[in-house]
Image (cartoon, rainbow, N blue to C red; front, side, top):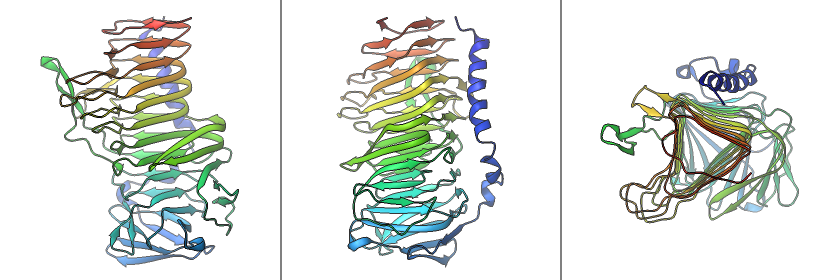
Length: 438
């Protein structure tokens, strides 16, 4: 039986492992976000132009567009966006994918706005791929102003349907009109960090047992448009108070150590396949970080890594507020998925994974799937698929060898909970229904 001491030892070891993995990466970003400066330049391999328009506004024009088709390629030596500055990727009509590699050997530090525009003045629906093998950090002022999906990756290269490769680690001029189908990662790819001030989310009125969510002050953080994809796939991934938002869309966090991540797109939503990945690294949400895909019918969230941990009132939210059918949250951690802890900062809140249907909803809540060796909910954390209106709740499926619910934590569901385990421990839990097959 796991004791409270054991619990905190496990969490400490999880976070130490991640932080030690960043020992080389973090010193590159030790300066305050307020001191972040814009540094963008072409590496000369393609026809990318960087223009300083003054007052913190920059544009990236030109690039190479094979056969005037859907793909526009950029190749930059450095790409960092200073606090409060705006960088515009300007392109002609007909471009569907803006594919940008960073080849200079330094991580990207982004604390301003990344924007896409058609001919410099009209909103763009193009997808933006940003590839930097050395890593990325998004500061608390970082925002996305793009009409399409955003894929941020620390892959070495992108592979295309015709077999061609667009490499950031060994820059080449090979370009293609075909669709991208994969992200190739070398050994120990760069890490991705998203910083922020926390989710400012809490329960509406616990004193009268109203546990619906209050999200009036939740910052969207990095956000894409409704129904679009926000994907961050790299080495270790940490949301340190950072927030990600894709209303009714898809959010993907993939922590890869080496291998090929396949990708596909259908109706604007990208999906990712990890069958070609040899090994994984870790994903951590700390200091009230959050990920949200809620909407009339909630979107989807997929985390793929070795160890996945949520702490300090961090949250994953896929709530259905209308008459639609929710998507799903999938947390696939090869070794562990740990959801633990509370916070008294800002609005008092708990670490929370939610596929609720809200008071105004008549729809169906999203499903939640946990696939791991060890699943722990502890320290007051909650996993919920609650019904606050006339809608229906989603399903929870857990496939794990060991499941523990400890110290006042709750798994609240209004539909069947299916848990496939070898070992199940519950201490001080309040509400859970479990079916087990050994």
